[in-house]
Image 1: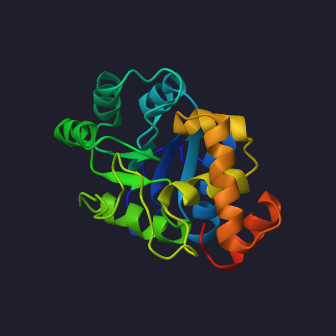
Image 2: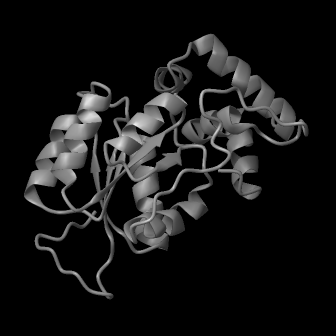
Image 3: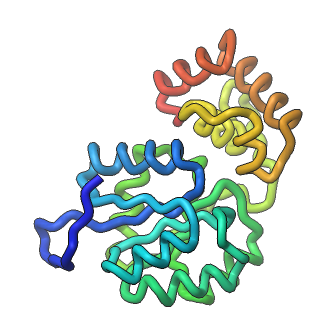
Length: 215
């Protein structure tokens, strides 16, 4: 992945983005999609220490910040990243968050929330919106709730999240860690996903999800 060594503002310069998430497969999949489809200049960091070092060495337009990666200690770490980002915009990048924590983070200068359950094809335009100075918080973000759909053929937000992580190669144990849940719960989600999609197994479910642009 490329990284500019100097700031080079201008309409022809790609937006400089850093994805801070300890799940390498997911972070690199998002980075690859953004670099290939939207032309972003993306750097990936997998812990707080590496992120702070990167922010001290160059400037970024937007920082996607996972609250659960190594080194993070709640809102104190969020405030530290906001200060280190200087003129860059920090956005929380998570699968689930308490509304109270989100409100506190916005008060610290965070510019919004991007749910990991969001369809990746929408991510580029949202990042561009944030880089223009707008605050983005999805209306239907399922904050601290178990989202449910009336149509049992449609994956709810947690199922979409589980499927996205499974599709980039994460094991049930890794998915459970990211969700703060258990292997049993993840297996239950996977069984429901396969039932809703009519899939034989998780690999088949991932293929169907991609075909239907659910990821």
